[in-house]
Amino acid sequence: MVLLDCETTGGNAVHHRIIEIGLLVIENGELIETWQSFIDPRVALPPFIQKLTGISPGMVRGALEFSEIAEELLAKLEGRTLVAHNARFDYGFLRMNLSESALAIMPSLCVLLNLAVICILSLNAMVCHR
Image (cartoon, rainbow, N blue to C red; front, top):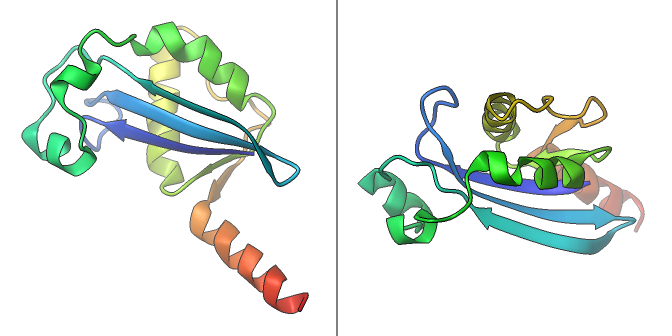
């Protein structure tokens, strides 16, 4: 499974851009990889987003564009379950950016799960097995 989080310039995948992606790859309950990339959105970062994310213009200026990290990102996601705090938000931005990069959208084996559901199921399993 991949725990993923995106930071963006706003809340609309059509009009706003990804500025950071971070992920953790978990296999058999073990953390096997961490990965993070700032992404140059080629637009100004709104002051509200800078305050919300802690990401400054200098952190993304000169970073790779999404199209330059897309293949590497897809390789990390392929065949794995995608888990995100706000899955619809992150998935929407990933789909939009991947399609703009002329790459296939998310791998078909990738399933979206809400992190809260995973936590609740995990807690229930822990309580039931005691």
